[in-house]
Length: 311
Image (cartoon, rainbow, N blue to C red):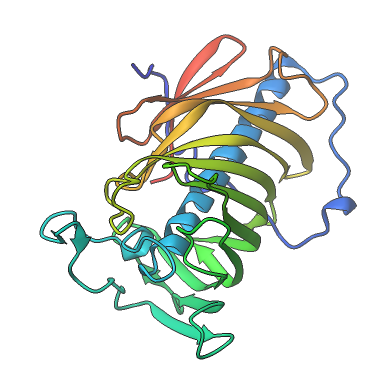
């Protein structure tokens, strides 16, 4: 079970980046850091990792959730209730579009269906059922329906914010399902910045291998989809006058259900770039036993704390 010593507001949107060029900021020296400083560094790096995971899981859900022509439909801000929608193995209603969202669909080689560019426009602010407010645009070009092997969805952002965080960069989903496999697989490459008005920032470069372990037999239904996530990342964080680089590695696959907002199982390690992943200052994040909740255990130097995930 998840242990106590609750850190309130641990991950309520970490202070993130301005558009300063990262190379202009010199990394804080790793020599002579006290134990408390080492703990602060790996805690900040873990915050960055967790927040980035949350933000880009949200992007993934929105990109595949637009409709069943380009994805699976009904995920992210397009989420529908699981009851009353299934008949004969298919969802019977049209794909849901929140009233505060505008979709623009452009056939780039008309009259061919693909490639197609879809802009999800949240305008000046669109409050979702999940309690988060999104603004600006998510712009995605699909080479085909993302459930088909070899097809991809490449996303950029125009003035896009999740709550107060500005998101910039590139997010690419590629269907890398092996020939003959009954389990769909996606490779997700991310090179992005997350910015907050205060001037602190984070940059996340990540590759995730996402394998669908449940729901493969119902490709037009999203509610029963379950994914196993593997991969690694590295990032940079500026906090005040300090600047750190870090690495992360998924040690046990993360479990993500499209019916749950949070990663609910799996183990991730985070460590400062200049240290090894066997250092006592490596953070181990345990997302739990599969229960859909917004807490996880963070262990640093033998001490375990319960942390609150973004919600």
